[in-house]
Image (tube, rainbow, N blue to C red):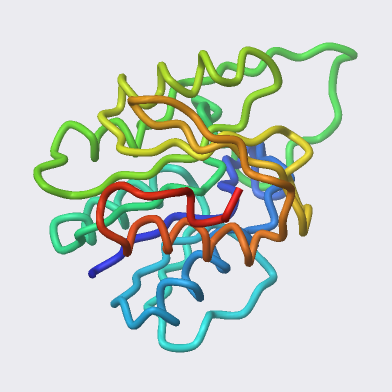
Length: 212
């Protein structure tokens, strides 16, 4: 398969030294890319800022902002069979980016934000015969919100996790499908990436690839 993966955080700069971002390390995207490559798939990884080196045998596109990630995904998407969107993309960006470093001013300041493009929703509208997998990080009403995301963005699978997953090596996750959900035991991100590709690579049906 031709697999397109997004990973890491995005950064939305207020000025030349400050940005809106999140604690994502980019590990999940890297492990997904390695798992796909180990199964002989052709892999493109679009990743936000991360300290991890490029996985061997993987085409890596490094980006910073959500709009840069959207452009890179739009370019690679027509040639992919599977999209796995594990990136922690900023929903908003500052309306204006100031040049240089803004000096300290009043005790209070207002920051005007505008919405970033919804990368996964845009892909879902042009799904065709592709398989689309999204990640959902939720702090409450996880299953309800993951199912809403699955339907709204035309996905085949949502991998539900919680804020403790940021920068963690081991995480708990739940696979959410249109027909139901399956909670996985806590495991490393490397193992989870393998489970996802065991699921994607096998014929439909059968037990969960994690053996739970």
